[in-house]
Length: 366
Ligand SMILES: Cc1cc2nc3c(=O)[nH]c(=O)nc-3n(C[C@H](O)[C@H](O)[C@H](O)COP(=O)(O)OP(=O)(O)OC[C@H]3O[C@@H](n4cnc5c(N)ncnc54)[C@H](O)[C@@H]3O)c2cc1C
Image (tube, rainbow, N blue to C red; front, side):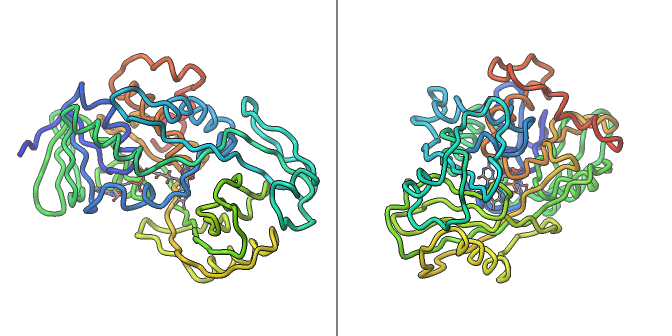
């Protein structure tokens, strides 16, 4: 088995798979993934929606640049698009919600809200409707990236945890937990919640990444016709839910609990909080909590993702801090990261994106 590569990507989630697919045809690339499956952590636990207004104006440039690819991917990458439109209603008890420039949205008053969301509590008087919100088929997108990566000659090694890496003679020597070793000129840190831990194991100064736990519950309720309802959230960020089947929803209390990198699990108190907040939105009785899970959303100190070579550590490339938007930004972010890594011009789809905003150079420590 080959052990020498041009690029080794640490982490096989959407960040590592997306970047890998973009560079594998031009560099001998390996993805090393600690778990048995590449999407085991955050990528496999998302709420799976595409929401252009989410994450602030800078993240919105990456999301907007990704929309066309997700809607209608290039021939050969996937047979159909990854989006299923449902729209989003951002609810408010007082002021009109504010939506970033460039994102299509319109005001909705109480009468229209009542018609759209039967049983809505009277406290919700206003909303902004964002028609572009869609579900993303995350599993299909992630699988398409891994397929494209392999097709272009990339190697995926699961059950391969980076333990340490050292730089010598212009190459990284990577020691795996199972005792094997690999080498590459460039090491990409796409390790999600472990981003700083991987940097530390390579002798690179961490960025100050913060993993935060988010809880999701699938709830069967005493109401029907929910599947195509818009995503419904509180503009002030206390909950969101969307129809999963005719009479069930995916619900989150919008929690953001500091955590170390780990196999995140839901806490009872957060499940209870989700149900309590839900009871303040609609009068649909909760019949059963069918499923619960949690995952980590990992943020850089300024909550913008980080793409680019470390300023100090030669050949160390950051691809971290995708927070709660790593899926919806994946197409644009992967193309941008590939251009930065290869030293090539930006793809035209990135016309509205400013890569310097996402550079690790913005942190004094990098
Ligand atoms: C509950 C929840 C809801 C979300 N909802 C949305 C949403 O609706 N839309 C959206 O766009 N985003 C959403 N997100 C965010 C999105 O899931 C993440 O931004 C994205 O999955 C991050 O991808 P990643 O590849 O960076 O991380 P991960 O998928 O966690 O991948 C990192 C990988 O690195 C591996 N790794 C770590 N250390 C090592 C090591 N030493 N050696 C080898 N491998 C290693 C891990 O095993 C892991 O598989 C949500 C996240 C959560 C938790």
